[in-house]
Image (tube, rainbow, N blue to C red):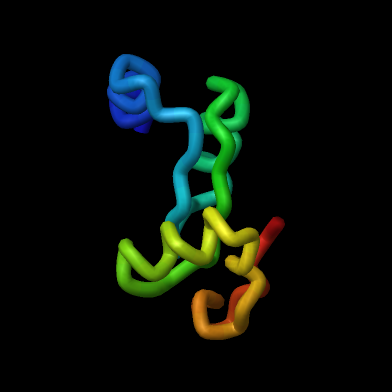
Length: 70
């Protein structure tokens, strides 16, 4: 898991939006000062558009059984 975080750091990633982030991976992202928004599903272009418009809280982007975090 640490390899993935290091790859993200080296790639200049500052935000991860993903449906399936384990708590331990989330904790490593936060420790690496990478923001994470877990529990989000959808087509990439739709998710990015919703993110830009501050609308990721729309229920259509919520992973079933998860409440999207803001």
